[in-house]
Length: 283
Image (tube, rainbow, N blue to C red):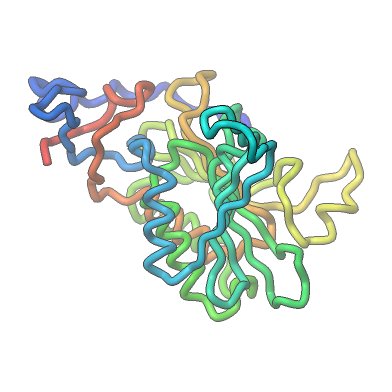
């Protein structure tokens, strides 16, 4: 993730209902649910696949499971090996798809494994994606699903409709702060933990922009959006996302608006790195 300079943050606020344990036990062994905030630090509740897959099913997308590995029919069922498995969700018009790749030897971003890769193309004549976006574990599922709902609602999933300013407007409307040095390209939440930035796209991010293939080593590549949460300066990221340079800005804005929303979210599992910073109330 891009290096960031930040002022010393103010002390974190104490969580609501401090007398309630974070992981209290209940009859039946299930964990109780809490309403928590801020959303961008709340993690994925250990349900990032389910949250997204349920949304896609409701939108009418088809799911396919692709299994690659060794399965000898003569082996006992407990001895059969599946080396890799990917779940692919495809929209009815076949112009957009979402791939759950966590079990399929995913590559890493911000030292975190990519969980969802979401892509789109302009027409079905080409098998290649016009753009791709990437989401690691612990990205709040609400933000990923809102991105997908916005993608599904578009007639053309690749046409640029608005400029990048909409993305920053979305987060600053929820109290995020524009970067002093890059007010038109970056913003951070008031605790300087979560960031969104428009800049050079990391390597390996798939995109149809020809500059992504022709950029020389000493040249800057095409610009795209990145977002990430860094619980403490120099600490491992809680989550990270990256959007190819051709991802329409209004789709990134839908993600950013949801990510920075002040509305609480329902959680049973809280991230270890941020649980003490979360306000919470029993659901």
